Amino acid sequence: MSHITYSKIWAEAQAILDEATKIDVEQQSAKPTKDKSEARRTVGRLYLKYILAINKLDECYDQIVQPQKRLLIRRVLDASIGRFIELKHELVNIDLSEFSYFDDLLLEMRILPNEAEVKVPTYYRRERESEIKERRQTIDRIMRELGFFEDDATGIIMTEDKAIRLIQTHERGRQGRLRAQFMKEIRSLKDKIKVEQKEEELEESSRKAALKIQKIWRGYITRRRIRKRVVEEMLLIGMLPGAYTSTEERKRAEEVKELRRELQAEREIEFQNALVTIKDQIYHTRGPVMMEEMADEVRAWFSGYKEQTGKFPDLPSEEAGGSALIFSRQGAESERSKSTAPSSKESRRGTKGKKSKEKEEVKKRPDEEEDPGFKMSPSSFLAELMVAGSEYDETWKTLDERANPMQTYYEEFIKKEKTAQVEAELRKVWSNFFNLSSEIEKVSYQKLYRILIM
Image (cartoon, rainbow, N blue to C red; front, side, top):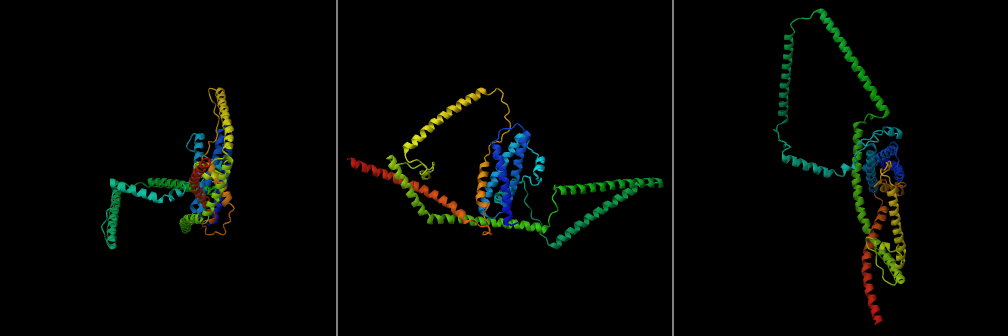
């Protein structure tokens, strides 16, 4: 299939995920329900939707060539698998069973059983082929050393003519033994038959034999007709796959898949090389300009802070964000302390209020708690799915790829990402430099102040 086909499959999978996440978010904030059948239907629908999306995303990740698309697809695929496992736990808790049956939901959602089949993602094995091969070789070596496997003994080396003669000799001997056994059985049967049957007995036995043959034949014909009818019905409703394509076409399809995987590896190497080269290019071309802009901004903030408070500021720590936070902070320390004081009082009042409410709830709580009903557990993957979905909508959904038929990397996306990365690295370097320079300036200012006093 072409690049456009897999892009359409990705769009279909993303549409299914958007619908599923929308329902999922509503269920996260919904009130508990005591209707177990309705809860099972809701979770079952989500479960089937995630299976459909996972199968489509796995096919896209296996065959899409463009490396930046594959990064996003992998994120969405991993998050979808995680959410799928969470929903499986919910179904186990609802059904109290490891097995769930969705015949009614499949009919309602018009999904074929093979479409809702849980498949192992292709990349589980593809990305670990060398590791799996190494493990198998290690296990075989250990088993051979322990004596479980016998070493292949080298047979007698012979020519093709000798091998043919040896096979012919054994085959003639086998046929002779079978012929002797057959003649021996015939001789024993002749010895047992001593008295000839009468004509009436022969007629009766032939009639019984004919009836028995007719009975067996009619049964065989009827069973064959029923089997054929069952197969036709299964093919009609789609429960059995149709006739396979010819062997040449299937081989060609597999060859195309392998070619796309090889092209994937080439595009990935190009993409990784581009990440390094573009980052170095940004470092050398835009790095000095970024450093000057940062220096001007930090100096302006430094002087403003000094004029307002009369003392030198301390740069935020790296854990708090470093120099990136200086523009969001307030200029004066007194204003910050004023703003934090009421918030602390409010937090104390809030904690007191919470404690009093908890005490009242404990008092009102009956001795025997009732079952609150089913409520969807919080998900660890839903936020990632929503973020990845918005990224797809902003970047890839409406992207015109007619100018990129070879599906190479997009340089503007790399520049945007690496510019932010270089800026963060330079900001960290500038923060260390600023701390050192501010300490020197503090010392020089204190010395000047002492000289003026004296």
